[in-house]
Image (cartoon, rainbow over all chains, first blue to last red; front, side):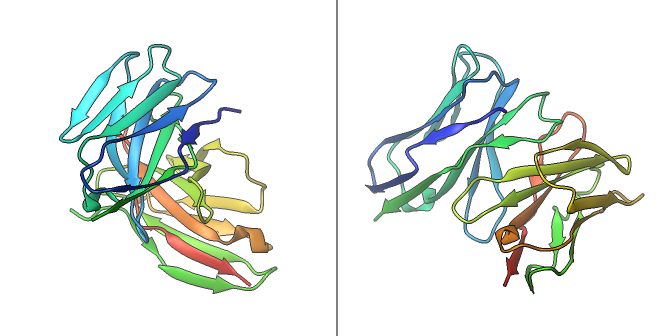
Amino acid sequence: TQLLEQSPQFLSIQEGENLTVYCNSSSVFSSLQWYRQEPGEGPVLLVTVVTGGEVKKLKRLTFQFGDARKDSSLHITAAQPGDTGLYLCAGASRGGADGLTFGKGTHLIIQP
Amino acid sequence: DAGVTQSPTHLIKTRGQQVTLRCSPKSGHDTVSWYQQALGQGPQFIFQYYEEEERQRGNFPDRFSGHQFPNYSSELNVNALLLGDSALYLCASSYPGTHQYFGPGTRLTVT
């Protein structure tokens, strides 16, 4: 069974601070996806990383895929209250066509 | 272009009852996946439908069944409901080469 462990589970920081969220697995995935979910809504895709060592930037968010394609990180610079939400990583075994394996998520609160 | 839609939004059922949840995929998508998200947890994959057939299944008992219609819409059926089935049920649609787009979910409460 493939598992994804996310850490930390909860994070509450002040506006303007930086943070990093981690997603680790003992299994190799063909790709890793990061989602953000707000209360009462479904997850919304932020980014997909496919190549080991890949780094992708989305404004203040930086995503990295480990060289062995087993782990990933999400770094947020100068966090804003609008970044508050549940951040989920999900592994895909076959190009995203199959069912995704999700981590438990990181609940992030950015206080003004 | 409408995204993935799900109905109903909320549902309350009693233990032992049966429930049917519905999903309409995003326009142009032919694959539908269902996930269960317990409170405070990440989504767990239930199964995926493609061309009206169950193509892949997660670790869920056969109380959970589904169907896909010729127009690609889908239903999730759960029989003999347990308290532990209370969760947000998410539907996601996709097309070969695209990622999965999620609907807003159906919140099921079993009392």
